Length: 253
Image (cartoon, rainbow, N blue to C red; front, top):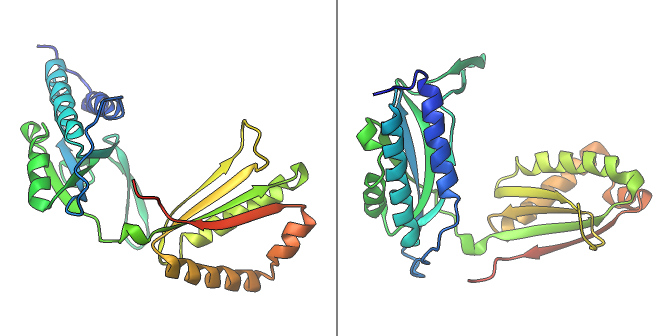
């Protein structure tokens, strides 16, 4: 049987197949709306071996069936697939090396997020995957609990004149880096308008654990501005910027 000469290439193709399939359209059954369902992360580690073309095809087909089963039950959420080789940073001197194996002879190939009632059910879902048959292993992890019902989304919309784009982007980037250091921050996004009739041409979105986190963030930003001797209102006026902001909470499905 013909073998692939480059295990990294063959594994990369395998993970690409998994990634493409996991994102492909498929009619899904919604899970029962119950507080008992929680998110669990499955970390799949693979050994460094040369797969035959037939083995790759077989594993790919098994992954298709596994994910299809999870989707049909409404238990599949998302996946991230990684290349076998990565950069390893170690020690207080931050030594950098390029390694195929981050952990012994295994490397982290994919992370899949699923819904389950408890860790035991998440383990059973993980065992349905074809990873164990390759000599790999699976780690089941639970998110540190955050009450998602209290999450608050902070949205700013901007109308920026052409001559103020650079100044605005520089300030926005500084603010985004600051927000990432504040407790309670979850994630943020920034968008620029490309097509459409909206008068806004920039939007920034920041998601926080709760309103208390936003209150603390406001104080931190104000202190940062004072330290920089930066006046937001003057900046807005000088650059002819129109800004609107509001807090939003996710609607129940």
